[in-house]
Amino acid sequence: MGVSGALRRTTRWTADHAPWSSWAWRSTAFTAAGVPMALPAVAAFVFFKAAPFTLLVLLGLTPLLTRLQRSRFRELLEQEIPAVSYGDRPLRPGALLARLRSESTWRQYGYHLLLSPLAAIGGALTVLAWACGFAAATVYGWLWLLPLDTGGTGWTRRYDTVTVLGCLLLLATPWLAAALARLDSFAAAALLGPSRAKELARRVEDLAVSRAGVLDAADLERRRIERDLHDGAQQRLVALAMNLGIARATLTDLPPEAKAVIDEAHREAKEAIEELNSLVRGLHPAVLEDRGLDAALSGIAARAPLPVELTVELERRPGPTVEAVAYFVVSEALANVAKHAKASRCHVDARRDGDLLRITVTDDGVGGADPAGGTGLVGLRKRVGSVDGTILINSPSGGPTVVTVELPCGL
Image 1 (cartoon, helix red, strand yellow):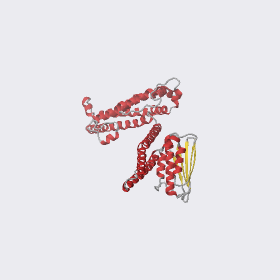
Image 2: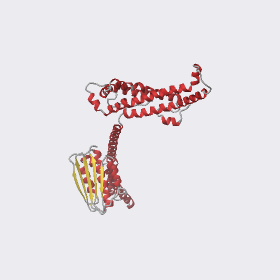
Image 3: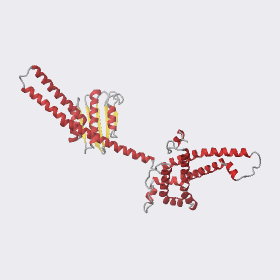
Image 4: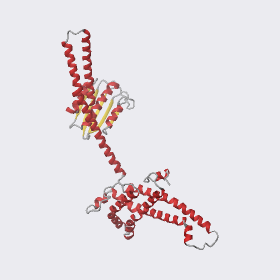
C-alpha cells in the first residue's frame, strides 16, 4: 500500500511511494535503537548517584555517544547531523577545560542526559505497543494454541473487543513511532548539530565575503571596460576628428556641399568624443585609480555647474571599491543638487576617521529632499548599502540640505 500524502508530510525521511510496512518498521527500528543509547546515562546516574560523578562519566562518553547517535540518524532516518567542535573528538589531556567551555558540549550533555532517556522510554513503549497489539489482535490464535476454559457464553464478545483494540493499536503504533522519531530528530538537530545562531552567523559571514568578491569583480570589470574604451574607441574617434580637421583645413578647393559635410562630420566626431569621455568617467575615472580620491573629487568639483568648496583629508587611501563608491556618491549628490536644490553654493567634506570614510555634502538650496520622491536619493542609498555603509539625509523645508555618508574602509 502506498504512503499517503499526509503521511509523507509527517515523515520527511520517507521516500515517495515507500511501502507502509517499510516505513513502519524503519520508524520502530529507529526508536528502539535509542534504548541502548540511553543506558550509559541511566547507569551513570544509578551507580554514581552524585551529579558531579555522573557528569564526569558522561564527559568521557559524550564523543562516543554523539558518534553513535549521528550514525543512528544517518543509517535509519537518512538524516545527516553535521559534526560540531568537540562533538566527535576523544577527550585528550589538557583539553578538559576547553571542552567544558564549549557551548556545543553542554548542548550535547542536555541531549544525552535528558532527552536520550526520554527517547529510550518512547522506544520501549513503541516496542511494547507492537507486542501488545499483536497479542491482542491474534487472541483467537492464542486460544486455539492454548485452549482455556471460557467460563461462560459471553467470552466471544470480550475477545472480539480485544481483537478490535489490538488491530487499532497496530494501526496507531506506526504513527506513534513516526511522531517520536520526528521529535527526536528535531531535538538532535538542535542539540547535537551546530548551533543555529552560529550557523546563521557563519552564513552571514560567507554572504558578506561573497558580496565583497562580487563588488570587487564588478569594479574590475568596470575598469577593464574603461581602459578598453579609453585606449580603443576613444583613440579611434580622436584620430577620426584629427583627420577630418586636417581635411577641412587642406582641401580648400572642394565644393561648398562637400565642405559642409566635412564640417558636420568633424563636429559630430568631437561631440562623440565628449560623450565617450563622460561615459568613461561614469564607468571608472582613470584619475581615481592613478591619483586617488582627492584628485578625482577635485575633477568633479571643477566640472560642477555651481561653485563647490571641497575639503579632503585622508591619511591613507581606502580600498578601491570604497573609493569608487565614494566617488559616485559625491558625483550623484552634486548632480541632485544641480537639478533639484536651486542652490548657489555647495560644500563637500571627505575625511577618514579610523576605519570609516565620512563624506558630507551640504548645499544652501531650498531643502525638502525626499528619498521616496524620485530625486535620486534612493540610488544613493542602494550604492552606499552595497558596501554596508550608512547614509543620513537632513533636508528641512527651506534648507539647507546635509547628506552624511559613512563607508567602512575595510573593503
